Image 1 (cartoon, rainbow, N blue to C red):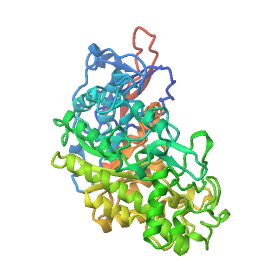
Image 2: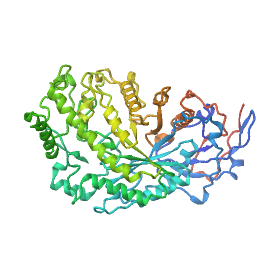
Image 3: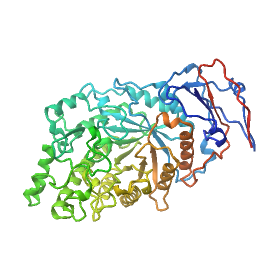
Length: 555
């Protein structure tokens, strides 16, 4: 079966939704966009046979399967959505994350014809642009300083063709083994060779378990990657990106998000899901046991006059899946609140901030003057937030406790380089979380907003988990609003896939985008009230001719 949409603004009507069924995974979807005609009080939905001569059909399985006949594509100009919206400074542009495997292991754009159709649909929905991971493991796969940008060049040209913007993520981490990872993209083979010769190049926990997601920050300034330091490798990558895409920066590529750790986030890999190592809501473990981190800890302890403190990380911090009260370090009156605990956390969190400062300082010098914004992503670790020690945040490197603000130092570091603070879990509400996990995503977001405001930088948001319900969208709208100057400057929705194009999910997205464009002041409607020229129907893709639809009249 195929889904057919004809719309000038893509706002769905509740009457139409009743006829829309869930797409089969192997079906073809047909999307037609017809130019809207002037209307007064009545909009007439026309017979499909009559409209067939005016709107050619685009056939593809959304977002990435099916067939596409470029000769039959005819995308009519859409009426400007902005003309129906109030222009104001509180508009929050919405971006959509592209699939992790947008570019193939071979360096080509994955299923480009279906991508073209998906971008067309997103544009019609009023989306500002898309976000894509620019994988280190793909681009520099063939050897040190050997870059292949061609798959991304094709994507950027396609994004430009549809009048969209692009957020490019410098992804210096491995894909695979974390929440939402649907494919595997390791670090470049030549880097993995260096890691096999020197396993201490990657983060290590107290049991000696190595994590190959990201190069340990302990060796940031050491020439351990074929004569270059990790910071130099990241800088050379970004410099090559700038050179290849210099004609697009600032106009098509409007943001560079700089990856600084696992999942592209500024954090330690303290809660790895691969092989069942960690499960929610475990406290995680400190990642400071490679030889470079141990050496740094020893030096810090010696400088502090407490040489014994540098022999190892906390011995009483428990294991990945324990709770705070199960450990001596994180319990209510635990070691975290002693002189030793404060020393260790200041060193551990300080190394993370220093790591971000080095990478972002380089990124700022490279992209300064291009017109593209810089952003950095921080993880929304909301479990055990209501406890005194905030154990899960501590193991990730955020020194955030009852007595210490872990996000203000990060915000101030980002401010040094004029970097947008990108934060996750914007869609989550406290009352949705399991009580035993002591979660407070709403409290965490409030704290981050205060830190960002104090540092004088912008805040952007993402949803942490894949959700399409009105409750999640409503929470993002609530978060995006601000009467005190600390609302969102942009929101990126996770993620473009088949589920997004299911009828109800698509309707929710379109209404959400429209409400965000109006500053979040418009309540998400349960049905479409925009009275657009749109109908939804199903067509058997094997039929040679389209059957006539019943004519419907909207009053």
